[in-house]
Image (cartoon, rainbow, N blue to C red):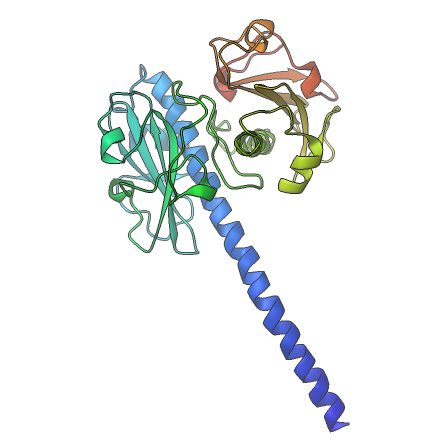
Length: 327
């Protein structure tokens, strides 16, 4: 009997030894992904305000961002260990953000809109775009961001940086985070707790990030970024080429070409939110959908019982969720 009990305890100890590191690994990944999500949503908000402030980051300050995105705690100093804190440092044509993860990582994002901005040389970057980096330890502050190791995806930070898919103004086509549903630069979800469609907008933003990441992995083509691939890389979403509605709430509809991809997510208000990412300024979808400029990320919405990326509107596209029209 004693031997049996000892054997059970021994097996239990082995299983615990296997399970605990696995659990901790999963938890660490989730913590980093949440920090990355906050960072990219913060970059998106800063990019939206850049447009509102006559295409300048110099007046995109803490006071303005606290009003436009109160779900975050904005600061020009270190984030501390506050999970919703975002540190900001900016110039006229660039902005750097930093977010903290419980793993001890500080994640950085820099958005540069001018090819002559001096930060390109300082941070050893070759051209405007959105780039990411990471350090371990404290303090986590945007004004102490690294000057090397920048990359255009979270998964490749610390490696030789590669050129982003677009050099348009902030909010344009980008290829951020690690595989799995992590956010993309583009419009931030409409701020405020009173927005019942915020989850749908966030799902759409995160899904855009995933397809942008896979675009890079697939030799800069959206044509092979399909449901089967996305089901593997981001199983937290229910991907489909057909229509979506209120259930399941994580459903994302997809329609793609070689250099463009359209996504749709359904909100509880009966609103279908659309996003299109266009990486080639000669893509025919620009004329077909009457997009406001060649290349970039654009948003739209319709109302109804369901919606599909394949039947997205051809007018009313805006550069943020707040300017999305009704098709």
